[in-house]
Length: 331
Image (cartoon, rainbow, N blue to C red):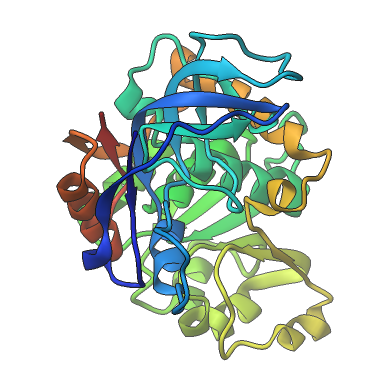
C-alpha cells in the first residue's frame, strides 16, 4: 500500500513509500482511507522530529473510510462499515491507504454528509467537546444563559466548532476574528459578539458590557494575550487552552482563584484509558449533528487526490496560519 511520510522536520521531506497492509490488533479496525484533514498538530509533530527516525513518520489525525478487516475483539463495527475518527498519536496516522484504528475512538460516519464535509470534523470536535464539557464543566442541557465564554481564535478549526457547541449550550459567546470575512464566519456559526485579537481585548470586551467572563478558551499563542486573559477572567473562572505557555505564568491566576486546564485530545488514547470510548460517543453525536444540520461543517478547502503534492499544498495553507475552517484531501 502507499504511505506518505516525512523523514525529517521539513515539509519537503514528505514522500511516497510502499508498505504492507497492517494487521489489526484485537480491538482494531483496518480502514481503507478515503479522505483526510490537515491539522496544526500534524505540523507541530513534524517540526518536532529530531534526528534518528528509523523510518518515515506517517502523520494525519483525521480520517474517513471503509472498514476492510476487524480485530478478534471488535464489537462496534463490521466489514464494509464507513467510519470516521481522529486516530491515536502513538500510531501511524491517516496519510496512507490503510490505517489501523482502535474501535473505541471511531464512529459510523455521517450518512447524509459527504466525505469532504465529514472528515474535517473529528479532531476539532473532540477537542472542542472535551474543552467545553470536561475542562470547563459546562453541562449543555442546563441553563447557561448567565455564563459567558471568550474564544480566542474563533475562526480556526477548533474555534469554529467550539463556537457552535457553546452557542447550543446557551452561553453568551464572544469570539475573536480579525477580518471582515472571519467576522462574518464566526457570527454565522453562532458567536453573539466578535472582537479583534489584534486590538486591546480588555476594552473591547468591557465595551460590550462584560467586566469579566466566566470562561476563556485559548486556541492560539497565549503569550501575547496573557495580561488580557488574566484581567478578563472572572474570579473562580476557568481558562483552558490547547497551546503551550512559553512566557506566561499561571501563578497570575492565584489572586482570582481561577482554574487552569490543559486540553490534548490524544491523552485518553495515549494512555490507553477506559475513557477512550467517550470519544467514540462524541463522534456519534457529531455524525448526527452533521446529518440533521445542527452542526455546520467547517471545511473550506478541498483537494482531490491523496498524493504528496496535495498533502503538501494543504499543509502549506494551514501552516501559513491564516486558515479559516479546515482543509481536506480526498482519495
